[in-house]
Image (cartoon, rainbow, N blue to C red; front, side, top):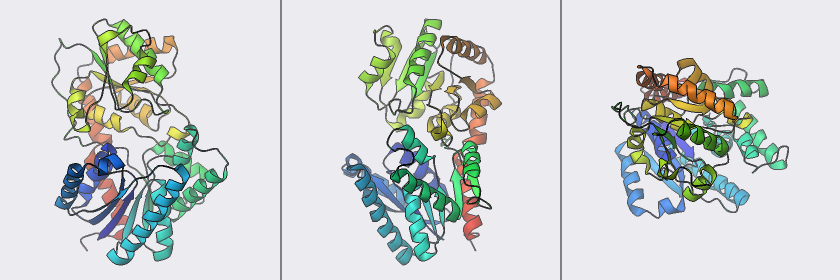
Length: 399
């Protein structure tokens, strides 16, 4: 059976590899997939990388149609992107006889809704997050503005008319069911958190003599990351153990991060800030003892499932997290794979640091972290859940 997969995430982006292509590899065994992505200009300019990605898709029988991503001017670019995607999706449904459209996030879902109304082909609304609330939190959208009303109208319509809805978190499902009780009455809703390829992210052997390395991976200057909390934790951690180090691995501006974390130059080479290609991230995590992730909370983050958490736990490392981010705090507390920090006070940071020190003494901590990754964040489980959803809409692909 033929599936049309729509996403504005580029296949050459790290998320395109870990959160799009990784799932499609597994699904391609049962379904014939056409993938439409929107690639950043710098990625499209890399002819070698584009050719390798095309070969990678072809090896799994995936037909890839890359398009150029445009972000400016902001609203016009989004409108033009929707129009381009709609025309291409409509053509693919009419000519390619796709039986299902998988729409990753809101703009592709709005396109899929339009094509569904024109052709009757069902679609899956793969939400990823509560996008309207994220835009408001990032101050890119004003609540109750015309743009906000348009986006929430589309959200309501997509939730009502989709053949199935995928959320990253149970917290978001509960919020949506309270917000849209009529639209979601009888709707198929499943939770598939951000998964990781646990064949890549595995525990490594650590030795007693190795220094404690507090890690932090991924973007921290997004506006959704609490840099003031991170600065507090670095201060407590490095002063609490004079042999400890802190390693921030990110593509963000390194000078700006150091300015916010260590304005007085107090930590010297005990604080490293560096970039690293995504393919080297498993090795990076092997050099860490734990990983810190402090995200801004609020309504916008109920639907968030940090990719880094799956990768960190898969590597057998505990996490230090803030509360209010999707199901993160619940998972950490339930399975005892880290520490939840509730506020940025000095007392709370010291309390959490002491709890972490006790946790790190537990002999089965590495195995416990890995076990939780396999239980909750396994890529194989994610593929199985998508396959089950497809089957509930289309029936058995082999029949």
